[in-house]
Length: 109
Image 1 (spheres, rainbow, N blue to C red):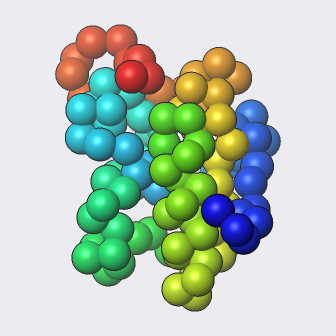
Image 2: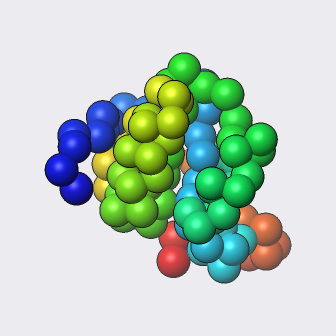
């Protein structure tokens, strides 16, 4: 990716951050940050009305690749988006809270 995308490590994302999770449905259901908005990467362009307002908006995926691409695209389209470096894997490793939709303990897949 030729342009630089603002990135912050998962353990430095503010507690009250507005978080957009761009992972696929199965990844989201297994475990995600409480309060995050879920829009799979491929759906973001067609669901701009669902993108939460945040200044900045923190974008996360599993490891940081998809979220970097989405953050770059959002920035090109007028948003103030920041990539969460290391993604949900780093989020979990940092001991940040997770919830799941399965009734099972949350996990990052």
